[in-house]
Length: 461
Image (tube, rainbow, N blue to C red; front, side, top):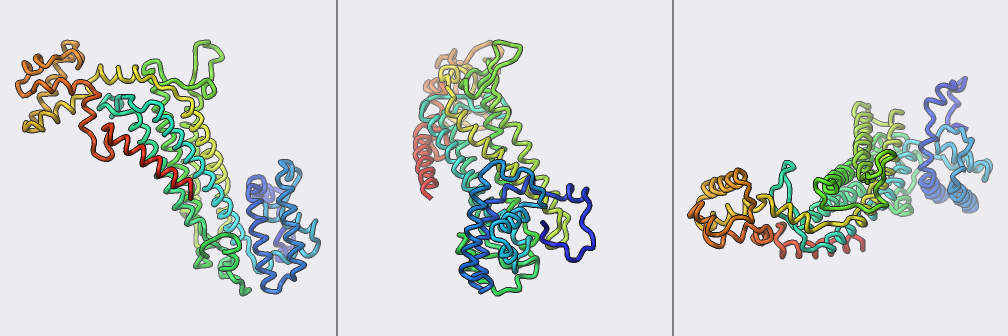
C-alpha cells in the first residue's frame, strides 16, 4: 500500500522499492506513530471530519495495533514502504474504508517530524534516568572511600594529590552537564509540528494548541516551511549523546589504566570483565573497552546527520530519511553504555594503600611546598626554582619526599622553615586547598553534600 500514486502511470521498479524502503528501521517509530495518529483522529473529530463513533473506532484500532506491535514478530513478512504505510494498512484491516480518512489534511512530512519528536522525547527521559543512576553509583563509590588519596595527573604524569571523591566528582560534573544538554535538547524536541502540512500549512482549520495539549507538548512550531526540513532537534539529541559517550570513554580510559598491574589502584568485578581463550591469567576490562569503542560509533552518528543536512535546499528532501538510523543507533548505544558504566562503577574496588603509595613516592606535593614559600614572602618564581632544584636533587640521589627531614630541607635552602617538611605528606598539602571546587577535605565534603542534593532535585522532577 502507498499513500501516493495517482500521478504515475506505472509503479516504482523493484530496485527502487528495495533501495528506498525504510520499514526495516523506522518500525521503531510505530508506538509514536499510533500515539500521534490518535491525537490527529481526535483533531479530525473536532473539525467534524470524523463522527464521534468513527473516531472511537479508529482510536480502538490504533490501540490494537500498538498492543500487537509489542510482539517482536509483528513485522515479519511486511513489505510496506515505511512504518506509516504499514500502520495505515493495518488500520484498514481493522477499520475498513474508514482508515482512508485518517490522512485528511496531514502530510507525511509533519507526521515524521511528530513521530521523531515523540520518540526522542521518551528517549531523552530514558537517558536522563540512566545518567542519574550512574551519577548515584559514582557518589556511592566515593562514599566507600571518603578519605582515600590518589595522584591527580596532567599529561599522564603525577601532578598533585587529590581525594578519591574529588576525582569522582569531576565525572559527576561532566554527567551533570550532559543532563543539562539533554534537558535543553528535550525543550527543542518538545514542540508540536502537526498542522504544518507538507510545507505550506494545513488547509483545514485545526486547533493546533489543542493537539499540542493532547500530546503533552507545551508549544507549537511557528513556521510550516521550517518544520518540513527541521532536524536541529535531532542533531541536538545526537550532540548530547556524543558528549555522554565522550565522557564515558574518558572514564573508561582512566579505569582501564588504573586497573592494570602497573597501576593496580582499582580492581573490576568478575561480572564486567572477561578472560582470554589462550592466556589463563587474563582478566580483561572488556566492558570498559566496549564503552570506549562505542563512543566513536555515536560520534559517527552525529557526523552522519550533520553531513546529510548541510547541503539540502529548504523544506523536505528524501535525503532526510537517513536521519533515523543514526538516531536509533545513538540512543541504543548511549543507553547501553550508561547502564554498563553503572554496573562497572558498582563493581569497582579501590586499593587505597596502593594509590596513597603512588602519591607518597612521587613529588605531588611540590606545588604545596612552593606555595608555602610564597605565603612566607618568597617570590613565586624563586620558590618554584627552589623546589624544582629540590626535586632534581632527589631524583639524582634516589630520595623520596618522605626521606627528607626538616633539618635537611633547611640545609638545602634556608627559605624552608621547619614546618615545610609537613607538606611532603600529600595528606597535609591538600588541606591548603579548601576553596569551593578544590580538593581540600572540607571542600570535598561540602561538594559531595551538594551533589547529592542536586541529584535528589533532578530525580524529583
